[in-house]
Length: 165
Image: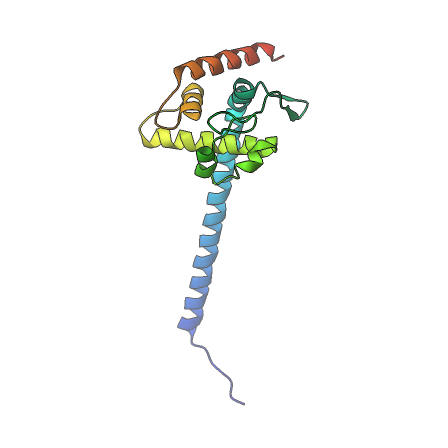
């Protein structure tokens, strides 16, 4: 039986490759954690807007840890659920349109994801998104804004501020 010998450069090369791979995985993990933290931060910032949208769209509201659906009918345009999500909005974020009809927590996540996407779209077009401009784009589409809808959201946000302890 012959002993196999491995040259030192080959071992060093293997160690270097393993180290590079490990550093790459660590970098991807840090990047994923950063994206996740940014998403949580965005969802926290968007929480009042999401609640205002649910109220303006369907008179629904968040109470004791769950959504109270008041008027979550399908619109003439085909928007569904308490957030009145359209097929296009669901498709834009890779969501299940039909599930938004009955799963309010899922629809909330879709609403948040769509608002985040609208925010990114605004930044790509050199605009600084605000809660109200996001609301206007949520209602009218990413290239347009609905000033009347923005006013209704603004009024609801003001009402929510006054009702906080």
